[in-house]
Structures are given as structure tokens and as C-alpha cells.
Amino acid sequence: MARPFDVVIIGGGIIGTATGYYLARKGLKVAVLEKGFLTSGSTGRCIGGIRQQFTTRSSILIAMESVRIFKTLGEEFGFDIEWHQGGYLFLAHSEEKERAYKRAIEVQRKFGLEVNYITGEEAREIVPGLNTDGLLGAAYCPHDGQANPFLVVDGYARGIKQRGGSIFTFTPVTAIHKARHFRIQTGKGDFEAPVVVNAAGPWVAEIGAMVGVEIPAQPERHEALITERRSLFMEPMIVDYRPDGCYFQQLHSTGQLIGCYTPDPKVPGRDVSSTSEFLREMGRRMVRILPKLGEIRVLRQWAGSYTMSPDGSPIVGESGVEGFYIAGAMSGHGFMFGPGIGRCLAELIVGNESPIDLSEFRPDREFVRAEALK
Image 1 (cartoon, rainbow, N blue to C red):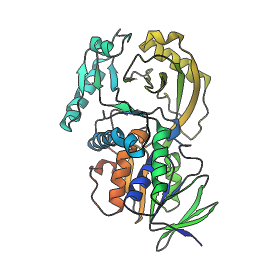
Image 2: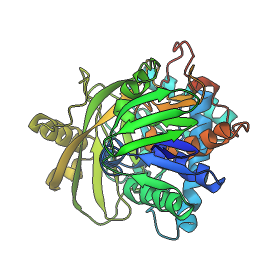
Image 3: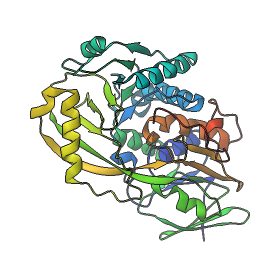
Image 4: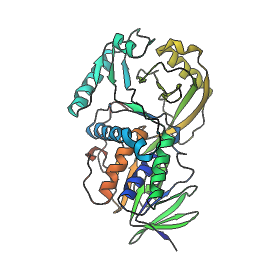
């Protein structure tokens, strides 16, 4: 006998739990199925940055919506999620990058985002000790921020259960069959629902294939590290988009620095083993940007997956199979987009109009317009 629900969500990261929370608030009976423990996929391996500086309409709007939600989530949950608005600082070391940031700022301002292009000296005032050699300027939004992924997901999960929903961990989905409703088979029994949300992160394509839906999503490995605690000395996430650049921030809650870089060449697949090469290279890149980090000790390194779409934007919406929704291929932006996508997807599922235009995320789009600030 299959256990009946209004909606079954596959994936217990930020996207799955946020969507489940907003559906449960509307009175729907929700089940979240997670193959491991909550946050065991990409969410628990991200570095917690939250930005609104993008170049496409849907990405800018969903990021701004998420920031509005993050601001009050701690109050809503009843505990601190370590939300802090320290900003994002995108460094420009070439005229090409400078032009790209200025074009992006023009687009972002049209949607009401407070963002400016500043000089290298102004950037050093924001981050004391910043190496300005060759720095032409920077794009700066003081309202971007950070939060703790584990606490945010925990808050959403608690909210689901408080509203009558269920969360099943260590429950991998093995098959999905569609008749009048979906029948979802797992190692812990079957579930049934008229609506399924595929929020399976690096496994989103495999879950889609179970109902004959092809999802162009490719997981890629990214490594990260975290350092010992230091007194607070910097506010924003620093983003260096040079080919050998990196991005890192100081956690306002602990004083630790946390960061990563995009590997070149890419490392496709779901292998999340970490390498000694990353540790050496990341250290070099961080010290080049902020020389005073040369003596800081690294406590831990790890790896996780960015599940990429062909154009670098998420794939969100109802698929060609009625009742089967996709919320995947977040392309490295899942945590920062999660609250907004969860709220908007919940509205779509109950038959309402999304408060944010998600047309650029449609599963049936042509994937031709790439997000420039990936």
C-alpha cells in the first residue's frame, strides 16, 4: 500500500525543503524524500554566499526575492540562521571585465538593485589590505550577504513537519511510475501523489529519466576550504574572475574564511573527493588578493557539485509530463536562489501565478542566452 501525499519532493537540500515548506504553509500534505541526510548533497557543501548581481532578468529577480526572504527567515523560524549582509565585491583586472560589470550594473539597476562600480582605492577601503595592483575597479552591492545553509534547511524542515508534512531521509528513489497519480518506489516502501517535484541536485537528470523527461544537467566538481577563526576584518564576498582567480568571504558568525574557485578544465561527474593541488592553489590565489592571509591556517577542505545547465541558469517549472515539476540545474546558485524558487514554485503548483517571472528558467527553453556572471 503506497503512502498518499499531495506532493512528493525528491531532494532534501535547500530547493526541496524550501518548496516543501511553502507548500505545507498552504495546507498541502508534503513528503520530502532524501537519499542521504538533509543537506548531504550540494547544499551542505556550498560556502553560503548570497548575491543578487546577475545579468538575466529571472536570475536578478529571484535573487532579490530570496534576499527579501532571508532577511526575515530567522524571525520566522525562531532561531538565528547567521544571516548577514556584508555585500559582494567583483574585482575587475581587465578592461573587458570592467565593461562587462558596467553593462551588468545597468541591467541590475533597472530592477531596483543598489549596485555601483567603484575604484580600486574605494574597494580597498571596503576590504583593508586588498591588493590593488592591476585592479581597475570593482562592482559592489552592499546588500548581498551570507547565511548558514545547515540552519536554513533545518528551519525549513522543521516547518514542514510542524505543518503536518513528512521528511524521509536515507530513502533513495528507485523508480517512478505514472498512472492517474505518480507512484514513487523507494527502499522504504512506495509513495503516491498527483504532483512530484524533482529537486534532486546532481541526480536531477537521473530522476527525470524515470518518467521519460530529459533534463540537460551536468554535475561538476568544485572544491572549497575553510580556515581557522580570525577577528572580523572584512565584510563582502570577494570575487576574482581572472582565469586563476577565486572567491572567498569571512563568515560573520565565526570569523573563519571560506572559499573556492572554478576549476579549469572542468571536472564533470559526481566525484566529491578533494585534492592537495586545490589546497596549494587556493592558498596562492587568496594571498595574491589579500596578502595578509599568508599566515592563516586552513582547517578543512572538501568538494561538492555544481549541477550546470547549458546556459548557466536554473531549470524550473512543469515538465512535459503533467504534474512532474523540475527544480534543478541551479548552476552553483541553489542556496542563494532557494527561498525564492521554493516560494514561486509552490505558487505554480497550486495553480497561482508566480510572483516572479521565471520564464528564463523554463524547462522547454532553447538554452541560448548564457548567464554572464556565473
